[in-house]
Image: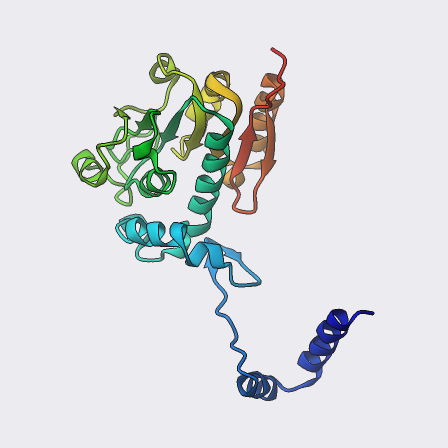
Length: 259
């Protein structure tokens, strides 16, 4: 056993046999601090995830998430899911010289605003399509108003960087609004409208450039039956996918996909 493994083993033994108050006293004397653990929408991290709380992403996230009334000041509520969106968006853009970005389900624009700044889109010649009716409705078929969502288009537009080539589509997600869209490098679906997203999956996938990614936010909150419906469509169109710890489904268009 090497010295590092011996140290880890000995530390674990001490932590188990010593009273908690004595263990904390020893750590304090040694100058060790217990890091605060965070919960991200029900996900408890066993260690402090520095990249989420320090550096470029954290600074941008704090800037925009604090304005999202939907999360009532709990910035960790969106932190891990938006970090996932930004991470796979960056991978997608690194894979594709050409191709736009699509975000459906904008509301207060937290994910869109953060990803746009994180990806430095103002310095890139690619379109950003933002789809949302901004009427607070639950789904395209359910017109009941949800107060938690943003209904002011002027609000989100006032926060948006106009240097970015932006295509605002103030409608519900549907095959019709997707018809004229060009090639896409990254897509984020967060409408909460299962039926619309299911119907649009094959259309969006067809528009994805090889090597592109899509993040489907609602997947992990659906019933097992609905998840299987999504899986069936993805298998039919040749998509690769995996479920992330955030309950988001990561969808990938293989570069060698045979049509």
